[in-house]
Image 1 (cartoon, rainbow, N blue to C red):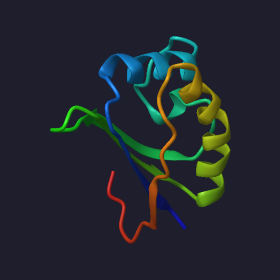
Image 2 (image 1 turned 45 degrees about the vertical axis):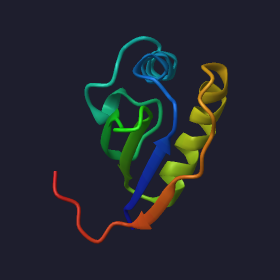
Image 3 (image 1 turned 135 degrees about the vertical axis):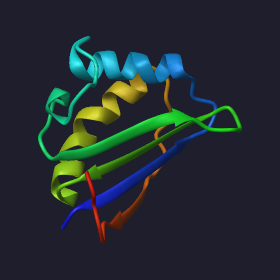
Image 4 (image 1 turned 135 degrees about the horizontal axis):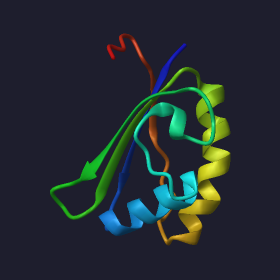
Amino acid sequence: MAIIAAFDFPEVTQEQYEEAVDRLTGGAGLNAPSDWPVRGLVLHAAGPTPDGGWHVTDVWESREAFEHFAAVLMPILQEVGIPTVPPLICEAYNVVT
């Protein structure tokens, strides 16, 4: 079952997001799901929030794929100073790509 994972990071900047992406991909950037260091990503969207933070929404093929990714991501977030926040996770009823 696919899941949606939505994160709101208060007071996180675009620069911090980009630094995390660089570390996550070895500087290759994120242009396709295949650029991620783990398999199972269906969709990734990120952008600034009106209150000066950063929002990320991912769709993953399964909770297991997301948890594998989280194990890779969490140390990187700590390195770049992004506080870990629990995501809103829900089962995806419909995914259109």
